[in-house]
Each structure stands twice: as C-alpha cells, then as structure tokens.
Length: 141
Image (cartoon, rainbow, N blue to C red; front, side, top):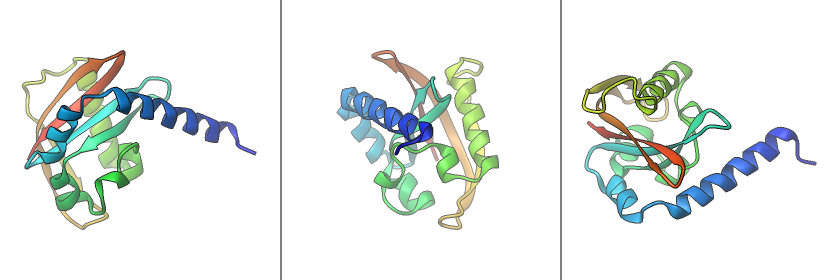
C-alpha cells in the first residue's frame, strides 16, 4: 500500500510530466546543445522545490557523469551534497523572487562527488513563466 509520501511523489511526477509535455522543444534542445553549463528547473510551489527539466550534455559529461536522463525530475538535493544544493537553491530562490538582477553574474563553487571534478559555476540565472509554471534557467561556464 502506498504511503502519503509515495502518493505526493507520484502526483509531483505526474505534474512534471504534464509541464514537460507543454514546454518548448526548441528551447530545451538549445539547453541540451549549449557548449557550456546550462539547465532549466521548474519550481513546484506545493513541494517548495526546483525539479530539473533539462540540462546540457556538457554539464553531464564534465561534472555530473551518467546520462542526462539520470537527472531529469530530480532536485539539486538528490544530486549534490547539502551545502552545494542549498547554495544552488538559495540562488534559484533569489532569482525567482527577483531579489537579484538577472544580468548579475552568479558564482557557485561546487565539487562533484560523482566525478571528483570541482570548480565554480560562473554564469547567469533568470526566471520565466509558461502556462502558470515558473522556471529558472542557468547558463555559463
């Protein structure tokens, strides 16, 4: 028998599937093919979380390891250590709530436990909305 957490997770996944189905394929392909680090996350207000919608192949190859599909539908807390995930989350929140200017560079240090790589993301984050959903995009090096 499914518990409340299982039901919430299933409902969230169903909502994500609906949102992804309505998203612009050309935009998502541009993210995948971006030659640096790029991603799109969707804000889920009920869960107060950002879920990965798409990410660049380079982000996966250079930092995360595995396949892009391993990260779609996951949060940064599913992928990164807590300190890194909370840094990403806080910067995403500042972007979503317009507490920071989208033209201001973001610098986020990271260390991948999956690949052993470490560095600092330097790039931009901005927000857009489609069909009542809020998204955060990050692009940089």
